[in-house]
Length: 288
Image (tube, rainbow, N blue to C red; front, side):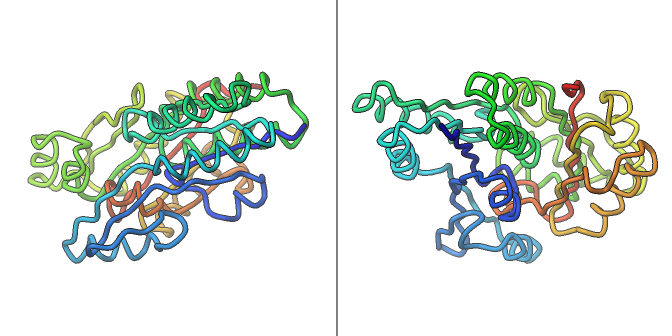
């Protein structure tokens, strides 16, 4: 029996990856200029970044309950196993909504093979977990093997990122006002990471070039076996810097460019991180 992998748009994977690995996607909502859009479907991330550069503040909301109910019901009726790789519950209510809809659908289909994993990951960190699970599904792995592997990948996923302006994260309630004010005042580049699903400032660095070098130093400190894993880089409409980081990783760690996933931060996550964001994702303990 085929096992379907479900991800949400906060995994920041482009359609190329959804198609290649047969992953289904559910969208978060982005509100801009009094209109609602489906992230990854009806709004281009560049539109969001340009609006933020113009001083606008797009808002986001979680995947709707009705979308989850429709997807879960479809797989429950077919009795087809579904594994949902969810965006961190510490950054969105999406996971909790999914759990509520799972319980509701299981009232009618108590044996429905629906499984939801709170990855505590964000952006391509979440996307890499979904790709790993999907590859296993395509190779014929069992449901238990896929769930265990996805949980393991999520637990060992490192997120190291920088933003151009902490003000965006502050507006969305992702960092404190003090952290945002100090960062803006001193024109420093903050380095952040994800800890237990939450965004945590790591250190402050002067100058964008120094930030990329520091990201590689942190990668070396925390990670291992880079040549035998997929590395992720996401960017807030700054492909040039993302590709520069990929080149630096290739040269420093011997990672093939084919093993580096580069994608733009989507409209939902980008509404909080802002233009100029650069994020790096890797495993601190990849499975051999």
